Length: 231
Image (cartoon, rainbow, N blue to C red):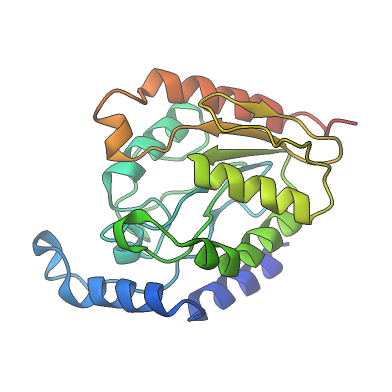
């Protein structure tokens, strides 16, 4: 399993399938943010990160332009990551509450973090065709990990997770389960799916998503990750 995830990660990092995203991520890495002018940006697609035996997979939207696109690790080096990893630490999943850079000692227990789109997109909005080209990576990660639960951060991640389960042969009802904070879907023969508002600054700094709200959804996802698939 660990070897398979390593192979997937290597393929992700080499990917240049979406010209718009390639141009944007590399432009951001060249111009940089003033606060990070002395740093060397990653500037490539960002692979998943976490425990190779994870029962819980967290799916985000995409790397932040000056977060994961700078550091090379999901939700690392920006405010979204600060919020997420603090919550994971409170839940006993992350070894520390902060995620500043690769090599900072952060480890995850029973959890793997990935995204619907692996490159930083302009205005945090990947196009539908870009999400489609990225989707095989998520499919392969879920197939390798076989998690018991998936926590989707935001509507795009929720749709990406449903699409991945559908492609894997899991029966998805029509109409599909709608996205809503705290939504839960437990399909037969597949991982339970739980939804949360994204941990973006737009949500956490406006009070749309509070630590208590996220802790409750995370606790539900953790509990479901300890259960067998529904039958």
